[in-house]
Length: 143
Image 1 (cartoon, helix red, strand yellow):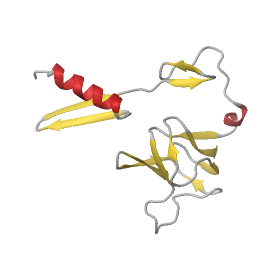
Image 2: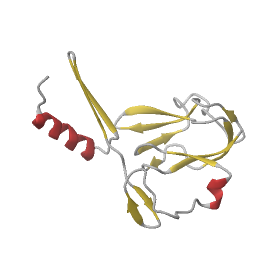
Image 3: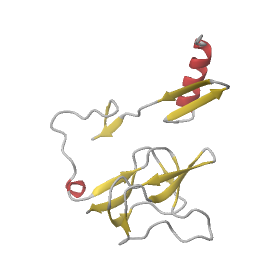
Image 4: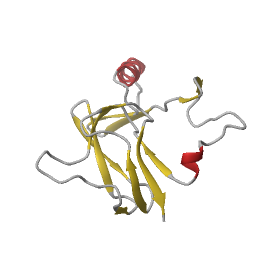
């Protein structure tokens, strides 16, 4: 398969410009997927994705709770549509894989799911609010 480097450059630029973490292009039998990892910011310092400096401490509130963070930039929605009840409320028991909210990004609705069984202790974002990559959304108590 011939690789079109110019196409890859344009797709990479699009990925960066739009703040996407993943982009897939399908043309007939060919499928190209590009993924991008975002840096981590702690204490005003930027670290490569997935790398924290030696001795970095976890804030005390995160030791006993599990934080669900936004995987992308967008708008936080607690319900699938305005006429539906919220996906979860404080005090609800949730299972791994259960939808907690939707992040709307570039007119695409992205379901954010729990990555563990637990209880919703706190919802950290107001419905309809903008969220940033890595922003805490939910505080769960693991079961």
